[in-house]
Image (cartoon, one colour):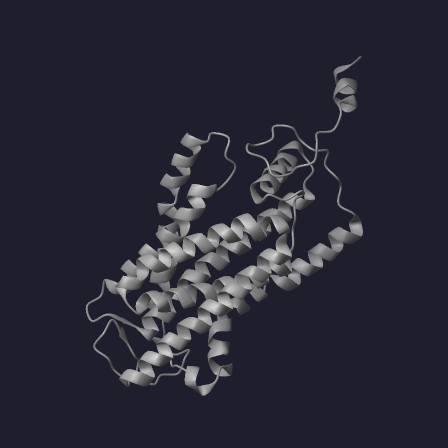
Length: 297
């Protein structure tokens, strides 16, 4: 029997499911149905521009919320850049934990428990340093701008991940099939999924979450560590509980968490402003009335 015949007659590997280590066997690649592939292409072309909409969502919600929540948060471009840089710094801080997890569990695929728990702590510590390193304390505008820059960097990462998944979806070579299997294992799912619109919904939730968390951290440096613990635990629960369920439950959980965090942060900020007047001596200083999307040097 020839080598080609032996390879063709080999039995298919079992379906991908939650595993403790990477699977070295490859499932047989399935060529995407032309109609499904065409629908996915159209859906992705429509979905990609809405990632930019997710960054406008906080400003739109400012105008829709009741008057007691309406705050004037000026958008300061240099703080937006600081927020984007903070996201990359927090991402870099997770690398030692990923290296350590690989040492402890060489068969770990992607970000495991240690990396997930460290993510929230790294993010909130970096956020606290960014907001409280300036004399005089943080301001509403600073917190909003840093949070929006942070969300923009994550949104850019989401666009890149979606583009990579779209590319993998159409490829059927061995390396692509192996990569799809590994992603499915990492996410705890039975198959590889590509869903542009759920990525957009998750991005909207992520934007609201990061802006809200930044406003929370700006209210005082003492808030940073408890918030980091809550963030890490919530992220761990989300990854372990919702991600294996599929893209729709994951996106819904992300949006729900983002809305709750954003609304809670605005409630805190509005309470500070209403109780302490236009200015206060604490860490969070109210801004003078400025149009929400004004750009400042």
